[in-house]
Image 1 (cartoon, rainbow, N blue to C red):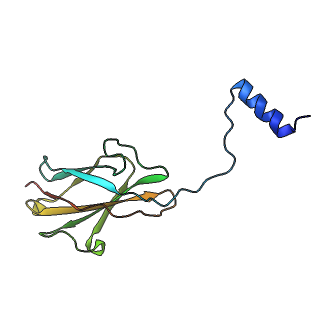
Image 2: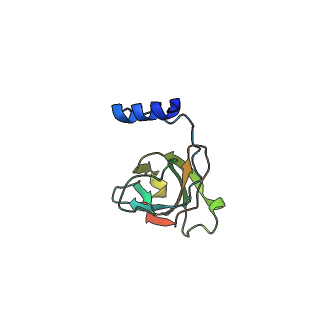
Image 3: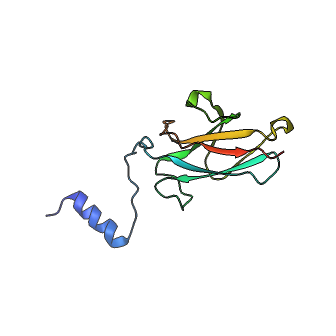
Amino acid sequence: MFGKAIVRGLLVVALGITVADSGATAAATPATRPICRVDARQRLQHTIEFADEGTPTRKAKPAGVMGAEIWVLIGPTPPVDPSELTFLAVDTRTPYTTDFDGAEGGKQAHYMLRWVNTRGETGPWSETATATIGA
């Protein structure tokens, strides 16, 4: 009267069993941008906190996102193009801390971030966040 799939589905529901999805779903390319905040209170150190622009009060990354790529330019003016930036890291959990040499004290650090998913695809760039490196 009932097909095997229907009976199996009814049995699973009745027993309260969770059945894992057998088909893997590919992570989508990130569509949102990270929001970046820089804590520069420590001498020769920046702590970079990031959150998604869609949920700025939460630490959670968007679905399918592995982490945030963090890029920096040290100099007097912010970057005009991302090609001017130097790669720092991919951080999977906020915050990220970076240390500087004494020679960089007093200079400006300009950060740009973007999400990267589990397949290595990147999303759009964040706004530039600038902070002075405390000497």
